[in-house]
Structure formats: structure tokens, C-alpha cells
Image (cartoon, rainbow, N blue to C red; front, top):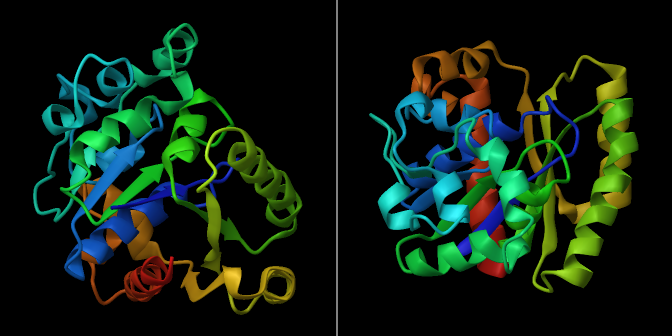
Length: 255
């Protein structure tokens, strides 16, 4: 089982879109996948066809030791991967985790119980360095950073890389930066081209070859409770995430 956190401290950069579409594309490629939603907004849950409003068990109960993953996981209609769902309850876990033992490693301990069930675990982290994000990074083998090719995204990248280094030093010696995924890419924009070139220059082969373009069909898909790669397989964005999944499988084998 390989565990990958999809993280970026900046909001609105396509973390959830990347997580759900990568999960679906990996499952289509024959991989057994669990998506862990660590964001109290529950967007990855809803985008995977699971109604966050009617959950009896969620990642909240798992983190507090009130349930195990086998009981809390769900499968959305027409979606070929499992989801450990989240809803607003998860916001309270920030406070409640503070007083618990091994608070940074609660998710890691829970995942040990389903280690034989999955090839890939993908964790959708919230857009902040919180105890929830720390739980995601503390159990992951690697981090995938989706980012737009714009100035502010580049500016915040060094902070995120430093965060990964601190977590590696303090909580998880296995944690590595797997790669940077360029999303919402506009090839007509000179700025996009310049930032993309800078990323390749500074990070080399850490930058995934795949470029995910801006795509209306990817944006429409969550309202139907489906990842874009299932909603419209022929859309350019869906095809890009299929190519990205192939890259992830390749990197996981080398990992």
C-alpha cells in the first residue's frame, strides 16, 4: 500500500479535483484505491458520490478512535474506489485531537488496519497546516503538490516545501516530495509558460510531465457526484488525469 497526500497550503489550486480524478483514473487502471477526505468541507466526499449530510461514521470518528476505517468507508454510486468520508464534524477534531496521545499519528494507526485492502491511499488535505494536514503528512510516503502556473502559487511553494522538510524531520522519515502537478494550465498565457519553465528548471524530474488544462467538464462533474474522468472520459482534462495516473503508477513502482 502506497500512501500519498495531495497538499497545498494555498486554497483553490485544484487539490480536491486532483484527488478525486486521480483516484478514479487509478481505479480504472486496475488499482485498488482508498480516498481519505481530511477537509471538513467534504468536497472530495460529495465529488465521489457520497452524501456527507447523512453520514453515521466518518473520518472524524476514525481519528478519535470511535470507529475503524473498515466500518466508516463508503462507495459512491458508479465510483470505482472507496472513500473515507468527511463532513463539518471534522472541524471539531482539531480541538479534540489536542489532548489525545499520538495525535499526529491517528490516521497512520487507523490505516494499518486496511493495509492489505489497497494499492493506493490518496489523502485530500485541507488548505492549511493544521493537525488534520499533519495527520495526512505523518502517514504518507509522499506528497503530490497541485499548483497553478501563476506568481502567487510559485511564491508559496517554498513555504510548502519547508513544511514537508519539517514533517520529515520530526514525524515521518519516509515522507518525500513525489512531484508537482501543473493544473488549470493555459498554454496561451505567457505567464503560465514562464512559471512552468521555472518549475522545470528548479525541480527537474520532480515536475510531472502531465499538464492538466483548464476544463469546463472537470468543473461541472462534482455537481453530478462524479469525478471528471467518469463524467466525461473524452474531455481534455479527463484525458490529462488518465495520463497523470499512469505517471503515478510508474513513480510508485520506482518508489
